[in-house]
Image (cartoon, rainbow, N blue to C red):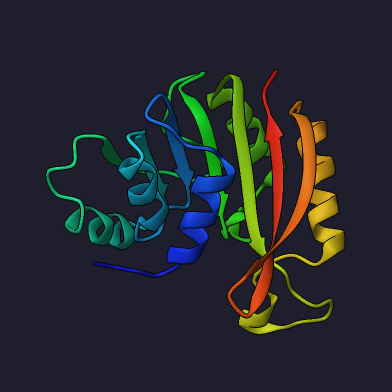
Length: 176
């Protein structure tokens, strides 16, 4: 089984309070660790990723799991119907989005009324380069939270959580 990001998967599933009543959209699912964690709680989950190789890898370790589907797509063009998701998250992938405004419009579109959105990014230092820059500074987390509000999401708040030897920023939002 692929175990990349297992701690992050547990964190997002716990913070989102995923239950068997939820339909979850994992935006940028990669090998699917958070998808599997949500499905273990009984949720119906769609993992979305732009990379076919990631979707093949994820599907290979989730055979015969009817609560899980895999779809190729991007944050800017989510392959889900309007109002489908009670929960959507982006786990360490917002920094890869090509157009944050379009991505957040899509998140709002696919969220059901009262749906929850979480964006999780690694805490990074200002001025970091290369792989060390994959994440958010505090100012970037605040900027993303402001963009969530501009996109029409409600209840926006930022939290910092310890994770392994570092920490992550979590931006929470919802659709009214």
